Amino acid sequence: MGEIREVEKASHHTMKQSNREMILKTLRTFPSISRADLAKITKLSKPTVSAIVLELITEGFVTEIGAGISTGGRKPILLQYNATFQFVVGALIEGESLSLVLANLDGKEIEHLSMNLQLPMSVKEIFSLLASGIEEFVSHHCEGREQILGIILGVPGISKNQSSGFLHSPGIISESDDEIESTIHKLGIPIVIENDVNLMTIGEYVKKKDRQLDSLLFIFASRGVGCGLIMNQQLQRGHSQAAGEIGSMLIGDPRNLQSTMGVFESNYGALGVSKALQLSSPAKAIETMVKNADKDSEIKVIYEDYQCHWEKAILSVVSVTDPEIVILSGDLSYLGHDFIQRLNDSCSIYLPMNPTFEFAIKCDRVGLVGAIELALESYSIFGENSNYY
Image (cartoon, rainbow, N blue to C red; front, side, top):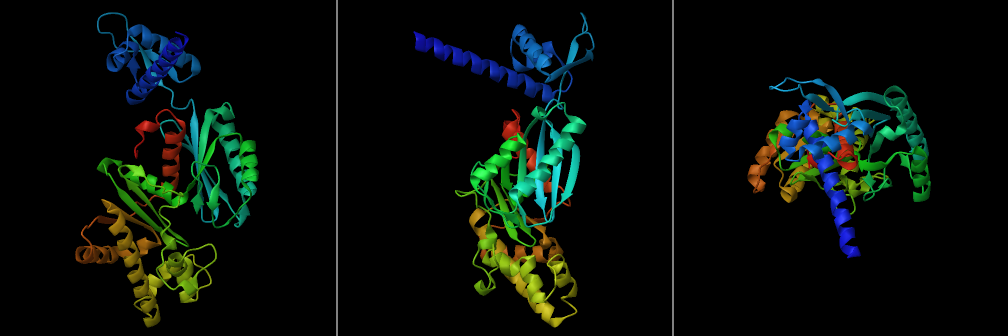
């Protein structure tokens, strides 16, 4: 009998938690609603709704915002979900900067910060900057650090499975797992480290939520090269969290292999192109190549070689993943719509499928949009209502 009572207790607790979440999600959907209407929509009894709402008001999740319109009796007291009761943080290493966004539980941006980095840097140095940004957020918008549920930090490279560490990240001086865990413990807020292109992929998918896409392939080219894949509305990370590391494809001359980079990105990332053009910096290598291809025969040869190998790489990934849409981002945007037409023509000839090819939405913070979306998915009760899962 003791075992049966334990099961009943667990069942009651689970039911109550489920009812709490149902009420909160209903309040999130209907920003101004009475207790009676909550009971009708959730199909819970009025006493159950009243008891849970009282708890939520006491905790700070819900506020009373005044009287509504009477339908014959007393005016009902309207309730509102308090989206600023708790927060999440999205952070992203972008080139030589660390960007941070504080967002409420509706995913609305509250404040944005950007800090300069001097890579290579150690994990401790980067987390020190992150901590100072968090302190600024807390001082401006929070009553205490406990209001921040968690952080998603996007970094170039490969992160560990469900971890706050990473296997490889260019520009970040790796430390032992114990040192990383100690640094995170001092931060005092849960954090997950994710691949930067994965976050861009989620952000791009969220931006296209009205199209109700089932799958999306996001390809990003800059100094390095990477892609993210959403299939069945789910981000694919792979067995070793390395799905999308297309920079490692054996496309291009292996003799040009750069330290911490794969063969393909060594040859056809911005760094590889800058070396081919004998430029001092990869910052504007692709833009320079495209602008001068018609003026210089040698640059034209390099440009045609660049397009040819990127075409092979993209079609190779498409042939394996079969996405609805392929988003080209970063330096690939300089190639223009003639390159998209080239991809369409090649798909028609060589592949049994022909997805839609588009350039990325012009949004400087698409990676941070993805970070916030993933943070809500990871840390809040509204995760299962995510726009990309």
